[in-house]
Structure formats: C-alpha cells, structure tokens
Length: 278
Image (cartoon, rainbow, N blue to C red; front, side, top):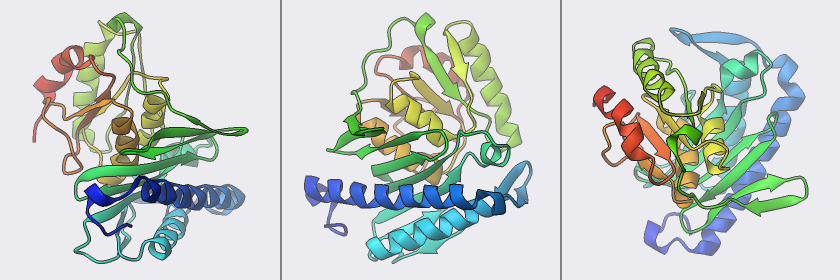
C-alpha cells in the first residue's frame, strides 16, 4: 500500500488510489460549478498572475480529501497548502484550478490536476475538467483512461507522429514575463514546420489533449510540479517522450518540459535546445 517502495506498489493499489482520487476530484469539480458565482473574487499573486476564491476553495477540498485518504503522504498544493510528513517519499502535487484566467473569464478550459509522485518521479495522475468535459487518469503500470458518457475507455498508447506538416503542438506563455520570449521563439520555429500550434491557457488541458491524441506534443519553458505531475504521469504511461528543453531527462525538479509522440524530438530540438537554460 502507499508508503511502500515504488517497486512494490501493486497494480491493485494503483487502481484503488486512482479510483478514490478520481471520485474526490469529480466531487470537487461539481462543488466548484455549483458555487462558482460566489467564488469569482480575484486577488493578485504578483505580476499578471491571479488567484480566485475558487482556487482556494478547491485547494481546501482537495487537500482535505487527500489527507483523509493518505495520511502518510506529503501534499504540496499551488496556493500554499503543505500537509503530511515531510520525510514521506510519496508526494501529492495539487493544482486546484489550472487555468484560472480561463475560469475567471467564463472560458471552459480549466481543470483540477492531482498527481502522485515518488520523490521526483510522477507515478499516478487524475485530471478533471468539469466544464470542458474532460476527465483522464492513469499512470505507471496502469496505462491511461478517459471518461465517456457511458463509463470509461482506455487511452490509446502513443504512436509515431507522421510528417511534421501534420503536427499540432500545444504551448503557452509562462507567468514569468521574461520567459515569454522563449515561447515566442518556439512558435516562430514551429511556424515554418508544423500544421498548427494551440494555446489554451492550461497545462492540464494541454496534457490531457496529448494523452487523448488530439495534439502531438506540449512544450512550456517554466511551470511547477503541481502543473506537471498528473499529466506527466499519464503521458509517460502511454509512451510519450518527456524531456527538458535541452533534451536531457526530465523529472519534477525541472520547470521546463517537452512531452511529445516518439520520434518528434529531432524536429522540436532545433527550436528548444538553443533556448534552454538551467
């Protein structure tokens, strides 16, 4: 059970954890939708980043639920909640509402992102978008799944991407304003090679679209563990490649990530590696 070394966490344990966390996350999503009219108050986090009352309320509900389910685990959430034993290698990374700008403007592209890591390695993840209608989950040894109107279906493992002219690549502006020039240079690089790029304003939504096979890759130069953990766990389980922008191995210590179908990296590398830095 949780608390044991990663290598002995059974398949049944993993499925049980995902079932419990999915139920928790879907319940929180329903609560946020029910109360949203009273949760729109915004305050500044510095720069252009904002937080709404919905972010704070969702974080309380999610972290309270995780603490009840997994009292031996650490919990680290975006808006500052830290719970559980500091020496536990099991860490829940929680973005209570990924896509706050979208939520605050009535755009449906926002999700609750809840990911479990063992140290810096993502293991399991649940992504739930109550308004955009996306719920995906999965992880190491489990594979991936998505919710349908009648139940659930397995996600298709990653396949080669085809010719670059067919690719759709997702990216976004980081909240760090200086980092945005790197995104602009990436888009300029892609504009001469790929079909389209997409920017929906939520790492969780973009990583869900990668897992669903709707886009071929996702690249961003600066985000945090709670933005990445759940989606990275699901995509890695499906066979997508995960790298840093300089091509080196990625884990949750790093804020730059490129997730892509196997075989895309040589093309992406030209637009990423020259722009990477530690």
